[in-house]
Image (tube, rainbow, N blue to C red; front, side, top):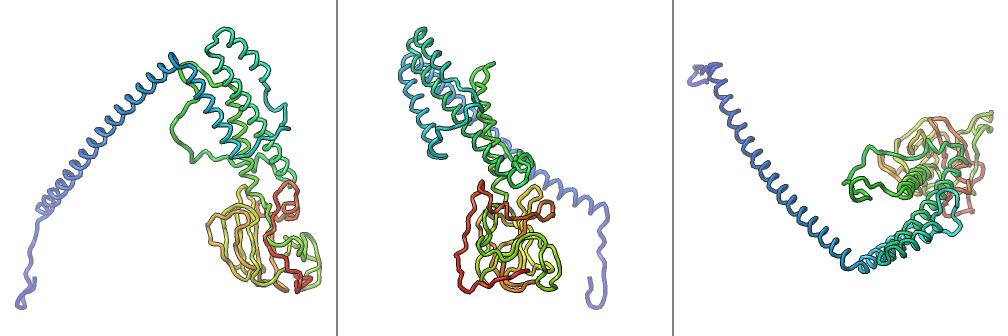
Length: 367
């Protein structure tokens, strides 16, 4: 300390400093320990209360169901009947009426055997006849759903192969972010699920994986198909006149016309690339990427997810271009492939979102 021109020093020994720090640390640790103990005690009290409520609810539910099965078998059958109707209507409301011409060989058809089982149960235990009929109806519906899933899977596989891709590589299957409570489909020890339910689960999973993969394959027109001014492959370069390789399709159009994502994916690049001008790239997974070039404006944001038909920018003439158009590429592991089979395959839903404007559309635009 400086006072009246003199400097004075106050020295605190290492032992005193260590003691003060130890007291402060002990106080902090004590406070943390008390707080943690209070939180743990509160957690256990809450857990015990919830466990008690769960046990009470389980006992009440089991007791009521046993009583209902003993004295109100007809009511139980009625409840199951309504539940089955609800399941069927829910499925129809989600995916529509199931087709009548579903493939027969993809899964068993136990309708004849189920009818015999219902007759036997009705003769042996007349009061359970209603339940047997509901079970037969449920199994028949499960088999029909399985055939429907298999039919959709076959269509998806055919569409993927038609553009030269391997369905096994395209199928989306990610178990790295899944969870939830265990809800078994069986009750009682030693009981196993009917194999038809397991078969349905496998068919639905396969269908979902392939259709999600299919959604990531370019299948939506980024601009009007009728205005392609330059195709894929070797051509005469518009600037030098010599032979050159063109890695995509050119769609001519007015400056400012919207450009659409050709499939679901994540925007992996936005900016300027040499020769391409303003450019957007979308990654669709499994090494599949689409590129959109010569834009006058970029609206897509880096890292964002887009769906097929999402507006990602506007047609322009930036970069190496002779006039306003969209240069569109499809690349697999950075190797350019012809985009036309993806966009014109009848197995895909090809959607053109661009308003046709034939008047004043320049011809022969390239880049």
